[in-house]
Length: 368
Image (cartoon, rainbow, N blue to C red; front, side):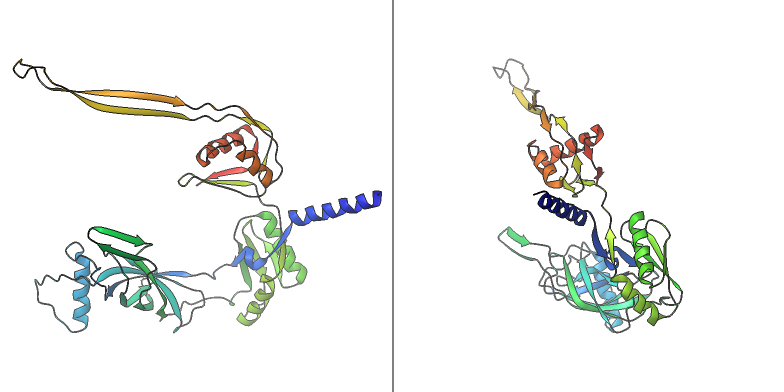
């Protein structure tokens, strides 16, 4: 009997150890410094709309863009011509240029209306140069726009599903200029952690040194420097092995994230509660103002019509009984304890902040 109890206790300890420490790949925890996307932006025109384009009287830049485009095609518009265009819309085009992109490859682009167009559905983006932060053209975008929304209007009534003033063109831009990269020219590579943590940085360097893929040392809580032989081929081969290494991730910090705009409360599994007592009550004040009109009884008595405001103030406070909250050592117990209070998400924000101030909530509260 004692032997059986010992085996059960040993199995429970092993299970708790596995739950406390988990292993993630280095590729999921870090990114290579300098290997990143670059943002591109451009201004263009969308044509072929079914009467849902910009109102040119309110968006003069659309008419100016059309004139410039036609002049480049050899068409001269007489001066003073008032073009009432309904099938053209001015748009902004954005894209992300991946690292190591080569000339001739294609990337996706996002098209967004800039004026007062009602819909971009069925439109075609004309050739638009996409520039980087250095004002150099890196890609050219053109193609038919795919809009995920839909809408209809008739007789003063309308219905709309999702957004109609934005769309996407898959493989809609062709890369025309490459970004120079110094990858492989140095004998060091910096791995940047997604979240700063001294323990994770130390464990990553130990895992790399243990396998003999290079000499790694943590520079700070977010950077691990790895010394490798120079050369693109050797560094690519070594990084492929390093990124697939498993690293035991330490226990996370207990956090409670509160979004004050949407009333969302999110907490991770490390949050714990100490025993405490909570009383929550709501105070509401209602102010109602009405205008009373007082008129004289007889029309020829010499009296005047007077408007007097009448204000009523109602103060209500809901009773909140003092409730006991038991200590909770895991997330499920914390959820049950907070649900027992019967508080709304907005009330829960104040309760969690007060619990932290009282030392009952063992977590860090972050308000977004």
